[in-house]
Length: 113
Length: 109
Image (tube, rainbow over all chains, first blue to last red; front, side, top):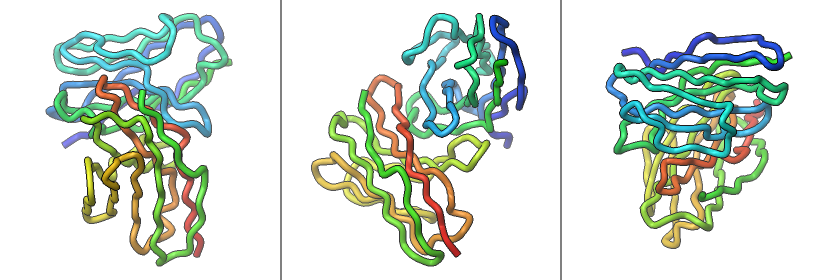
């Protein structure tokens, strides 16, 4: 049984570019959440998707957007990249009714130069 | 948004019991308390979850007092592989979760 998979594992971009990160949830899970983790900090909630809609959103600008597909996989898009967007981006999946029990992927390390 | 407060770091010798306490004064009635473990360059891993009193599983125990404004994660007989960052998480009822900076545990040989 595959866990949460994320791609790519590492990515280097320059300021102003756009990036798309991908996530496949654990088998059977229907809810996907995205987190940003800066070095030395705890993960910060970006948003959560369920039934292909954004259900909750953290304190992140509109440059951060997402999508969930019918197979429950998800994408995180970041436009107009800033140096401060450099971080580990984590995807977590869960069952809708047990959202506290999150299963995380290993993340995508994004570096913005 | 229910925030949590934990010690920034702790050291312990191998074989000792480690207790990490988390404060969550604004916990909501329906919130559960969940603890995660994170190793460098990996996503957090679920350890244990509880609502009140005491919960025990094969790796840890969780103690929650009656007022639920704090909780204590207890790791019995730690080993070097338990060196990691531990996060206390409380749901705010709206599917948003505040991880905080966590507690960096270092196990010393």
